Length: 139
Length: 148
Image (cartoon, rainbow over all chains, first blue to last red; front, side, top):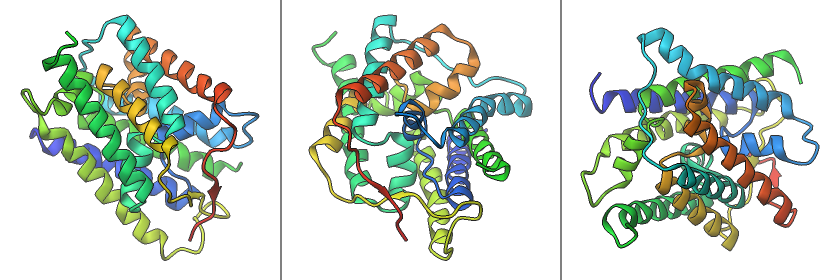
């Protein structure tokens, strides 16, 4: 598929996912929020969160069944780097109340000022981090 | 919690995971290529956000005409609209982590399906970070309230 068509179509599916969860269940499709709610104190609404995550795990398998191959991925980060990055992503998304999906896909769609600022901030932080690692003095 | 609601949540997760797989967002090397604006920049993943926000916005347009969700009593949308230090600090930490490994939460969780130890390690550390937040941060996060 075209280099831009697959991202656009994949994005549209993600948007449809967010619209479905909103219109059916009244919920934001924010991954860090859905997972974080399971780690909270005595979550009373854990069942739908687990159901969503089971679907999320099954999604790439549906892609495999449809296309005949798994999504190709390449991970360059070292194991210590993966641990550090994971800690930052986990802590940061809870502190900032959202990630690429909650603030990005859902927040931008409903023009939330908090989400606009959050997306601009984490995009800038990520771009600067990649710049320092690849072109800066870090390496 | 009733069964239709669980099925809707499952279907939503399935669409999300299939969309991630199709879009290329699950590949950290591609995500880092998108973030590397000073190098061999790969802008294609901007189309993921464009497609996702576009369709999601249609959902919000439909929501505006609905008194309540089809399967639940009320919409639970964050009503907090103020920017604070917590939001900014969290976004900076998340952005640094995203830029270091190329994983954000959705693609990492969906990537568990591929059975790679690197993905499992990242997800374990991400859960540890979320638990660390839970046990260190003050209780109140932004109030989740009903918004019309």
